[in-house]
Length: 367
Length: 258
Image (cartoon, rainbow over all chains, first blue to last red; front, side, top):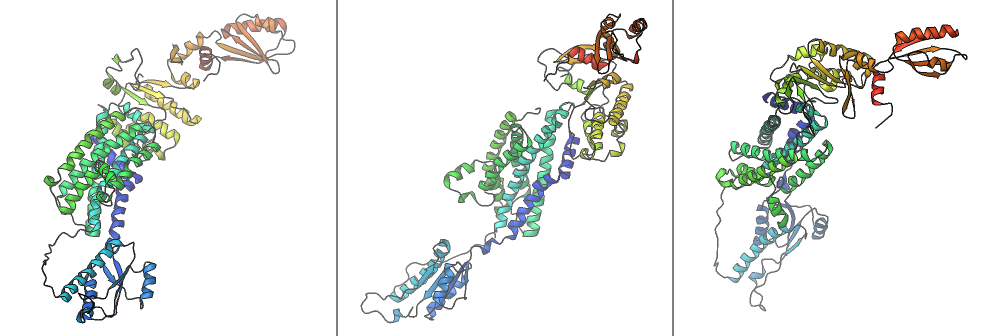
């Protein structure tokens, strides 16, 4: 059996297609997501026209510049020109501070009970709602302050802020555990299902059945060699993510490997099930895509499952990849230990049993 | 079924006194199997495949020795796909010998080979046989069976309908040989059919007579007597002894069936 195990590993490394799917493909994902700078994507470009040029108006301007995601554009010279740029998406928000802004409070309006301020105009693109919310609230804050000053009311409520230095988790940090899960899933399901059905098609299984080798040992050698390939996958993915993209792993490496191997067993079982169910290699390939694709998108490889509609979200919670990725993410990003994530391995254990039963039912050694 | 690859619906099979189903493990160590159109691992070299398959058995033969038997030693480091069809067949023969089996099953080992490759294969099979191994061979080529086999069984629709040495099988035929000669217009077909030992007379083309006869050595003298009496010259006289092909056709019938 050990000879078969070693031979299997040797064959995996000679099979360029297997190497591509199990090693090169996930590493490509790491590189692609590592190279994207997602922090740039959320920036809001704004143009400000300060026609008042008072102390207050300059304060508004300054405060906006201090907000990280706001990028001031000075490309337009008139409000109309800025509006044109807003329409074709080059800027997101136009803020106009009128000439008499902040002066009205000095000259109380005799007709009103309270002084009124001239309004700040905010023109914005209706599509970028989150960014506009922030812009509006900044402006809002100033107006409130000025209202208070103008009305000469004392500040009744106040707050202090205290910032805590948290871990700086970038998108690539979040995506790395997802890629780990995806790589293990695809290489196990696709690898086993196409590999075994190819053996069947080539009558290799029949040839093996003619030798005294036990089916149990044959399957054991297959599973063990895939697990070894998985360990190599995990190591390469983490190494590349760390070295090239400075991904931080806060938790225990051993736990990451353990969870990955644990998850791999589920997917190997599914691979055997697919191999048993499909009549030939082509079907096996297609069917394993059917099994893996939805999980790749819904189980939180690239984004959190919280972003999914609620019903789909609940279903997705029960897919085998979801708890695996959640566990990996908690370990890697938050440095959590087994005590914090114990529910996920339990879910996975359930899946191991279930997938084993499915494989047991569908997989036959002979044809 | 004897190889333990299929469950029998009824009955038992035995090799060396071992029930091939109840004692399949022991039997598998005793036999070597070459399957028709069975592949080996795509990404292993020949030497590695033999080494691996050897490890499945209680005893294993050195891969080099195996490759020597079928003259593939120089291909030890090649992959299966780098071999020609004939070489692949040869390899599958030597792979059947990894466990130094007592009984070797070869399933149509020469199907699809050119004459040279076929004769080379025959040589290898004879060599294996000379080493004291029993070779069980299935084939569609009667001359192959006649040349290689000491005993031939003819199977028809799942039943063994004849089992004997090739010579005995042929002797069992009513007509063990054919005699052909060229006659002329005057040759009397009716009197010819009455010659002792002649079973059937056929004429084709340019008065070529085909006789199906029982014992050619006796019949031939009767035929000469008949020819002398009638002043017939037997041009191109030929005695063709029957072969396994005739046996096969006689036993299984000539009708084409699917």
